Image (cartoon, rainbow, N blue to C red; front, top):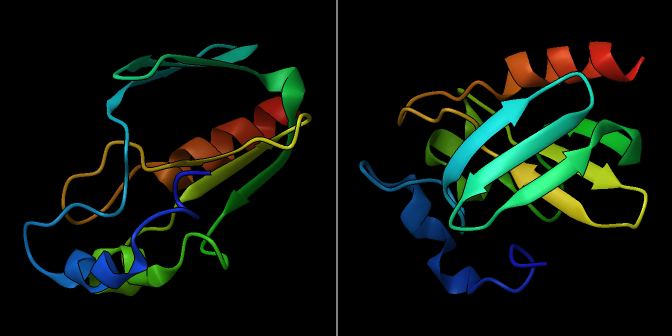
Length: 112
């Protein structure tokens, strides 16, 4: 997993103005009733039926240190799949906040 293998000595840089939170890929994310699609520098399709865990918040892998203000205004969206792949999403980040909470609520409803 890319976030685990990152150079941790650079983590403090994410606290400065104008620095993006830790991320390796950029693109457009869309949601239908059955699939999440990411199109960009890496393309990904996640069938909702493959999601085994949905989590909004920090953990021991994606820590608050990887965000400006230590995550005061937003938290990453973590999706774990049935094949044990884990993805962290930062959706519609605007240097202050992200739409992760909104996506979490919608996905939670769709998965029930």
